[in-house]
Image 1 (tube, rainbow, N blue to C red):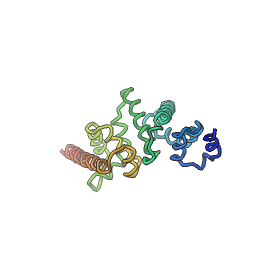
Image 2: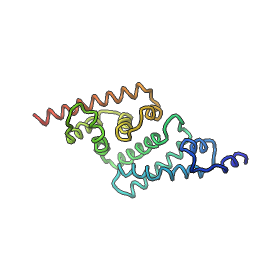
Image 3: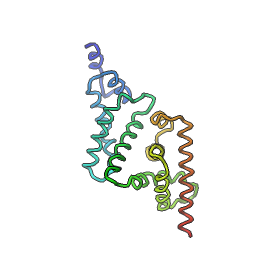
Length: 198
C-alpha cells in the first residue's frame, strides 16, 4: 500500500524513459508501461513500416514489438539507451517476420544502408548501384549481429557508447567489427567497380 502511494503521487509525463522503466521494474503499476508504449508508438510503427510495405503488417509488428518489450523489460539495463535497446527488438522482430515469409532481408537492409554507408567508401564519388551490389554481398558474409551493428551506427546514428551498452560488447569489439565491415564493403565495392569497367 505504501509503495502504491509512492507511485500515485508521480506525474508520469515528467518522467524520463529510464525512470518509467525503473518504476516498472520495481513493481510499479501497469499504467507506467502504457505511458512508455504511447510515447514510442509512432517511432515503432515508423520503423516497422521501413521493413514491410503494408500498414496492417506494420501495425501487427508494432504490437508484437511492444509485447516483447513488456516481456523483456526486466532484463533492460539502465547503462543502455532505451531507444537503442528498443530498436534492436524492432530489428529482430521485423527480420524474423520477413524470414518466415521468405522475403529478402538482404535487399531491405541494403536499401536502408546504401545512402548512409556511402560515407565509408574511400572514393570521391560513389555509384549507388555498385554500392547496393557490394552491400548485398557484404550482408551475405556477415553475422546478424554485425548487420545490426551497421544499422545502429549508420542508419540509426547511435553513439558508440549506446551500441556498446545495448549489444553488451566491449568498446574495442564494436570498433573492430565496424572497422572490419568498413574494410569489407570497400573491398567488395572496388571489386564491383572493376567488374563494371571490365
